[in-house]
Length: 310
Length: 187
Image (cartoon, rainbow over all chains, first blue to last red; front, side):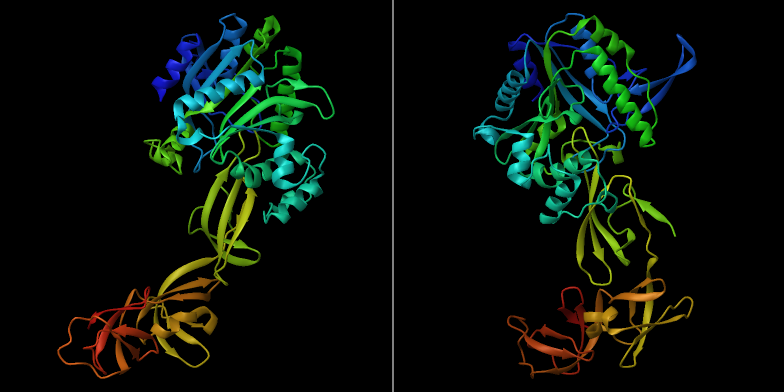
């Protein structure tokens, strides 16, 4: 499968790159917890905290800003606090960036790669594209952009989902969207075909561009196959000051949730200031891809030594 | 009382849920790529035996349930309670019919059972894996039949009814598997 991926990109003239796992900065996204370690020695005699990357996105964008053109990377990434049937704190990502591509063009390329890697085995049916709104309307009978916390609570009850007590009065619709997405909608997505979910709420834009409108929509997509989320892509945000504002908002959210503050990646922000070419990028969970290709049910079946026996 | 977070949840962990003691059956971690992590947890209510499914935000906590499994010897049944004794402390416990349930039909004096106690009160009784019991009623056996082909019902001294081979006679002692309710051998 790795050979297949490398052949796919070689044919398209996309360059394989390698960026560091360790960084003095970390993602401020409150949904991602970075492992921290410590370096002491030449260059940093007083010691320096280094974070293991949760994805190679920041340094890859620095390469893009430096003018390297379309690139891909296959690497181990690390996320604290995530272990389960579909999660291991250390896993392999395939991440790639295409200069001059918008989200639609990148979705088409993701589909081409999936068909090449999985053949007719899983992807014989035509792929499906569902906007975030359509997915909620179809499977939860509500509009995720306008629904209130009470509407979400009602939909959850109607589908027999027992929400956490603390959430009943919770006015943050973001958590409600995540609850219904993971419990009700995701398991139904991509049954026997590739399903792309796109046009996410602006609050879930992360590092994607936001298209102004009512509501504003993030140019972000996710790929599902057999109920499993496989990939997440963005039409990449290139505006440095907007990126800094989002980072700072995320830092505040982290602190509000009593998570440790992390240093922002000033290298990335400087690279965005110097100019990121118009591009789209996507990260695909390689272990989950192997799981689906093998017809396995748990990552334990495809990772030789999961975290509890590492 | 101690509390457990969703990270502690694993099969068998005893927690309080809806004011009843429960045992975690399954704990699934779900998380959207960029968003809130949840734990979908299946918990068996130890009073009713029913399995309920609950979702927690990762990191949420539940109170621990004071539930312990203790080996105890069955003493006697007084019609209302089944009395057991802890052979180490000689402490005695009375389990009501709800706690004993179906297990009653396997209980013979002096057999050692596993009693699940919640705050010192018996919640459930698990009989020994195998028991040796006397047959009190079965149809007359057919001499020479050792094939064990069809079998016939036999009522045991404790009230359980099991299928036994045709050659087994009234008054014999037999060994049974209490999990499957099946005859194993002559004892």
